[in-house]
Amino acid sequence: CAPVTDYFSYANRLLDVNGTVYLSGDLVSNGEFDDSSGWFTDLGTPGWAIIDSVADLWWQGGSGNAVLTQFGVCEVGKKYQISFDVDISSGSCYFAQGILNPIINIDSSGTYTYIFEAVDDALRFVKNGPDFSDLTIDNVFVQEVEILSNPVQDDTYGSCSECITGCTD
Image 1 (cartoon, rainbow, N blue to C red):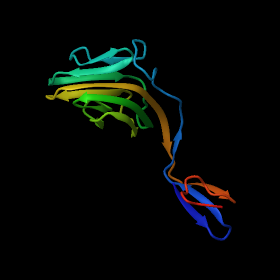
Image 2 (cartoon, rainbow, N blue to C red):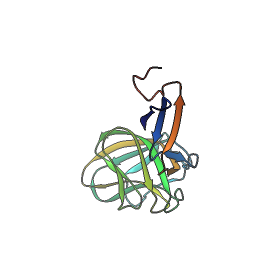
Image 3 (cartoon, rainbow, N blue to C red):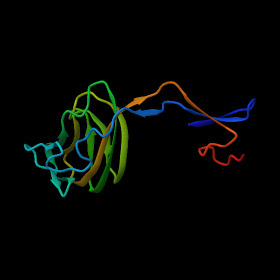
Image 4 (cartoon, rainbow, N blue to C red):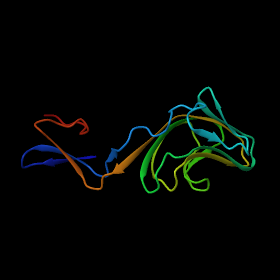
């Protein structure tokens, strides 16, 4: 967002280009992980486990993929915002749409937020490769969003908007 001053009427005009509009509430069954939340671990390759409502990855390295999946969340072609917390002791993993389509490389602790266009209906956290990984993922939230391509204008006559640092009436 950027302030634009209208010198004719002395208004502070705030323009928000490519603003985000939330079209849904949280689409994930549970912000934490539990047995009823709809998340599935790939039973063919050990790695992910749900422990105390947190997704825990313990990957010794090697071939194959350790995949944590929730199906039926997204609709192909729509945009979504995902947000989640990660605590990494070592290693990394990635968030994907389709196992071979990494969207976010998860390589440090913190909160991740990203907007993506769905290419399938599932959310996946994936680990593969030879390196050891020990990490947890928690508080996953997904919402359908729309990106506004037209500027949104907010006129504030007679006062300064809080996003205009140093502005005084």
